[in-house]
Length: 118
Image (cartoon, rainbow, N blue to C red; front, side, top):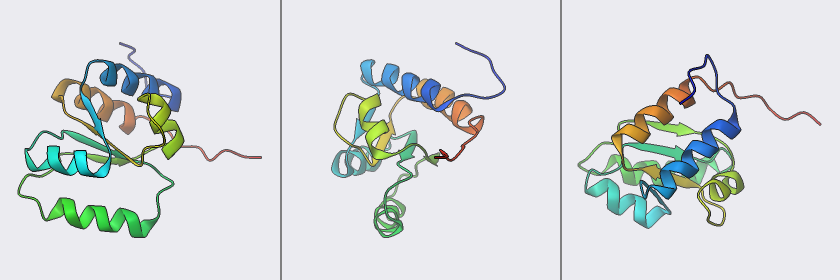
């Protein structure tokens, strides 16, 4: 694995794809809520382009659960998250493995978001 001061969006999406191929990623509201109830979600990635209202509704459901999600990040857009895991657009992606979640958390903490300029 790369040791770096910062990571690109592509680095993170590729690593998310690797976690998916290892069967350590779930997506979709219902599946994430189900896995969160069981305490299996170690990291949650929320697409940047979902509405605040949708985000707030989902967050209220998650905060009502007994088990907490250790970390949550807003990252990429729905299309890119879906592509990274080989699915259609995804607003929410949950990582169920502590090792993958830990590495993704480091990568996301070191990611410098830059708005695309036209």
